[in-house]
Amino acid sequence: MGFLESLTLYNILRGPMTWVAFGVFIIGSIYRIYTLVNQAKREKLVLPFVDLKAALKSLIHWLIPFGSRRWRLKPYFTLVTFSFHFCLVFTPIFLLSHNLLWYESWKISWWTLPESWADIMTIVVIIGCIFFFFRRIFDSTVKFVTFTSDIIFVIICFLTFLSGFLAYHQWLLSYKAMLNLHIFFGEVMLISIPLTRLTHMFYFFLTRAWMASQFAIWKTKDW
Figure 1 (cartoon, rainbow, N blue to C red):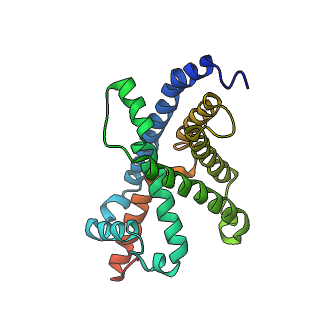
Figure 2: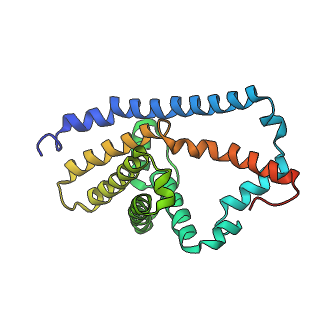
């Protein structure tokens, strides 16, 4: 417990580990996008085949809750999925404590969430992690395409948001220990994005554009 609370650990996590995490995330993400686009160029038929109008229509329908027929067929799953992803992305960006760290480090500041909203959004992510964890274990269709890394990331995401929630409310462990755990899990989650199938956050757009273009040729909708 003493080490978890130590200032030395905090300085390591807030110093070199932060640079490592952001470095791997940024460089890894750029590399993933570059290799995807480069592979599409080598195929010679992918990018010229993409119908921009059909792609944009498809993206809009799939990015809007209940915009596609598939989303409407599973309303509860759609609600959980969109709520989870929305809160997962925007809670860390607009959290007040994170904003203060950005300002402290680089004098960058922007609008922040009210603390009550941040609490609710954090709980949404925690519940979402539990839902997706059990879905990957017990849903036979999803289990068939699940890798160990998929489950590990859900656990890391869960621990990141849970430790942040507990640190803020100063529950369970001491504030310093829980804060260090929160920073550690957050950095691991950031590093894992370009190294796991979380790269779907980049691949989604080209995949959807390709599928929409195919359906446009058949004169039918892909949503």
